[in-house]
Image 1 (cartoon, rainbow, N blue to C red):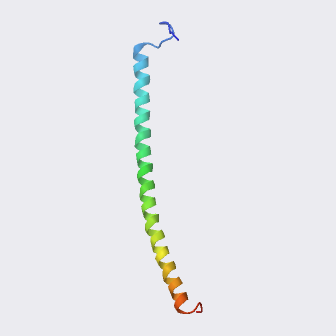
Image 2 (cartoon, helix red, strand yellow):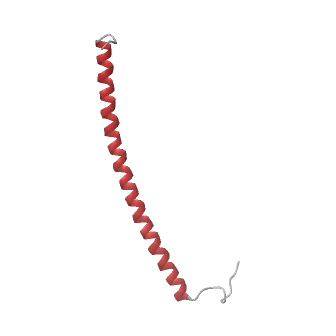
Image 3 (cartoon, rainbow, N blue to C red):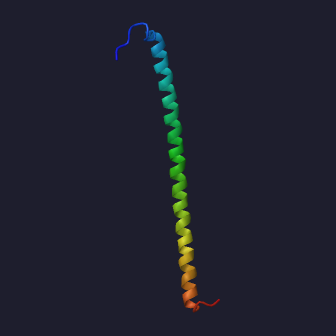
Length: 71
């Protein structure tokens, strides 16, 4: 599909639009990096929490076996 000169924006307008788009994309990339960092931190904290809960559960199961299932 060909465009004639009347349909294309003037070069300065096109450059401004590209500059704006680059700025927006840079801001979105920075925001995404922040989200990714927070998600990775939360995932790491949850893994420690799950590990602690699994240890507690194992301890309680062992106690229950040792006590014959009675308190």
